[in-house]
Length: 275
Image (tube, rainbow, N blue to C red; front, side):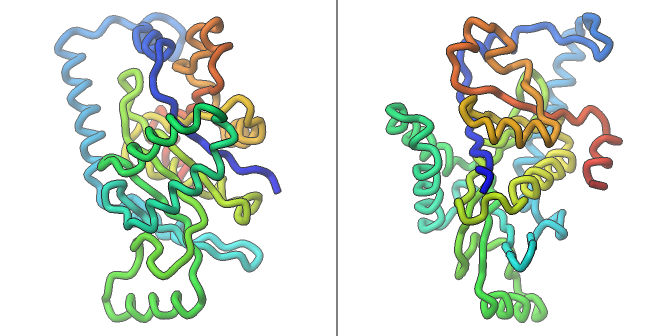
């Protein structure tokens, strides 16, 4: 089956720092009027508040009941939410093992150092997760019985179920824009090529819109041409913060591109929800 994207966020280097110093441009291509000090402070405060509210949200998935289950040709999986600092030990171990299985070959000799960084990132308080779970029919029946009795059952990090993948995302600020950044999208080979990647990215975009983020961003290895095509088909383009756009001489030595999809208006977000 088609290899689903394994997106991994790269930490900022010189190219990213250069991009952040660029003067913003208007949508018409001209240089915007420089903001006053007061306007800058007001804007930064507003962005900080958006990030604070997004991070404080207990369960983003709860707003989108249509995305709690994915079913296709008899294949059924369930999505649940998680926080990095609240993941059960078995879930953390699963994430570590899947990351290693999917990414060790991509990083090669750099993997040991990257793995240490990823292990710290995965359990950070600001890390948010969408967990892909599969349950036996008996477990699903028990869950619905509990829900009918008014007992909380959903979003319990796959207790009693089998994990098949995950999305790790965060709310951050890039170039003075609040964004939802997809740190990782990892799927087991058994669930690749079933449309699940597109389903997950649609959910991510809805969460971004609901949280009033200006864009969704992620990182893709240049060698992963399937992932590049996948995101391009979803409307993602190379970001102005990607090394290849900041400085081609630097970008040619980087193994990744940063992709983004912007949400410039409330109307566009509503369109995404309609899709």
